[in-house]
Amino acid sequence: MDIERIRENINDEDFVIRVRPFANDDGKWTGEVDISVMAFPDNPVDDEDYEQLMHFCKMMCASVPLMQESKELRELAHEYVINYVDEDIDIDIELEEEAGVERTYDGNIIHLNFNSKTGGSA
Image 1 (cartoon, rainbow, N blue to C red):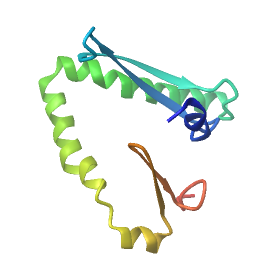
Image 2 (image 1 turned 90 degrees about the horizontal axis):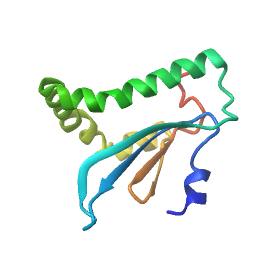
Image 3 (image 1 turned 120 degrees about the vertical axis):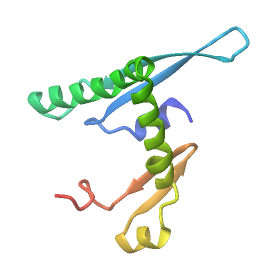
Image 4 (image 1 turned 90 degrees about the vertical axis):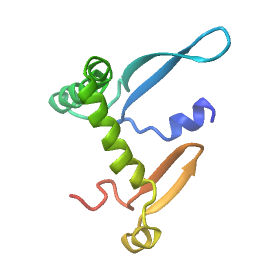
């Protein structure tokens, strides 16, 4: 995926958490990552909401070193991913079609479109 296709899939109001792995000379992951929160300068979210969203993103990023320090937190997150997040990949297609959910694939990214900006939650 080239940079332009990535940019087309990011909205001005999006906050992006980038995980950049470090590799050794053989191209193998060293286990280290650089985690960054990125937002566009022309983000239309008002200042108070922007600060709250940025803080929320920083909290998500802080979970990585917290999991490194806390075996209990790491195991809790691991179990959650196995039991809930990985299970969501097997979304019932009939329910998606009934709810009007459009699913498209872009490499390892799955885009869900609920046919409205709020997905029917507003």
